[in-house]
Image 1 (tube, helix red, strand yellow):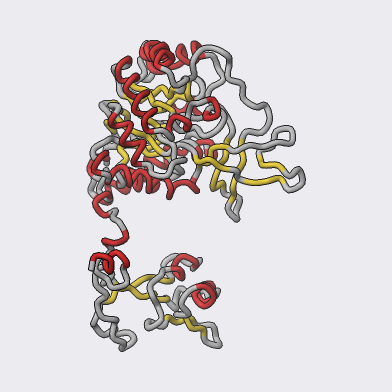
Image 2 (cartoon, helix red, strand yellow):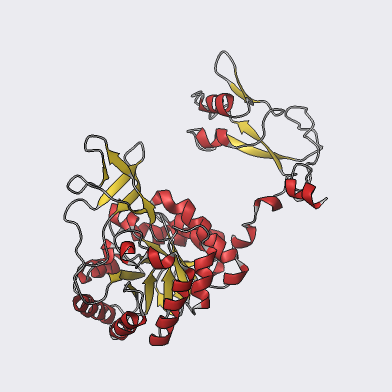
Length: 434
């Protein structure tokens, strides 16, 4: 049986599945339930400085994007950091950590961007026995307008400065949570590393408006006739998050910087993909809010079985394995040629492949009078759209053929080699070099 025990920054947890800083980790009751359900760790909902209380809206806080079957694809929230007293949160954190010493407990923090505020809160967090802190430089709404959250995360100099303060006044791991609301994620990651961060976590939520009430003519969620931008999360953000994780993992300037992956993780496969791209563990929020805490059992069971099937005995065996295969477009092999193949035994004759190819692609699929669909190799450019729109799994596949050889199925000669894009005559950079 695969060992899911994870060591992240010297913090041991029984599995790599942590709950992200969010409503599910807002108080002792929730966190205890999470640990009893089997979560390996939690990042406590973001703490703020003492002073004027944080006041959340009392109307709707969430907007949603659904799939055709009403499956939740994306969640937009306008909730702020914890609105509970700092002392209450600290007392609860201490009790939970004392009762669950084998679980990871990280304190998320967001206070004004001045040294005194950070210096004041860090010793109090340390007294709870928490395993580390996560600096919330990602929240895109409410707090950003006050000069915190993503307002800090969008300025690399601020990230480096605050991280240095925290490393000076706190002696346990410091994780910097990055905002995706930035052009190049490598810049804030480099700033975090330069400031001494032990790790980065990403992504925080994406600035968004998910829908508009066309009767009230206001964004949703709507509060007394008005709406605002919020933070977008859930399965829909996973591709964005994985790309940003990979960019940091393969960037020479941040090579070796530990990463906690966040963004749309719903299944064990999602977690494995993040980890293959360099994440040492993962944080989950929307999936728990959608399906409840017990979803972690499916995640653990699925990951363990996959690791057994692949011969991995521990998570570190495959963390980062996909990173060397993430490259830039110009390094792709243009001599690699595939053609679409339609299994007539599996085809349900829906015609979606034909419609997509005929109307929007390369007219490479023919339809007979009795609705038999065939691929014309001489027109197929291997775009893969037919595979993506086909409702039957593995009915259409892509088959590799070697350039310059005769395709035995069609009798046609596969086009000759195209050459590498770096020297291809259609590449403007190659022309410029000449």
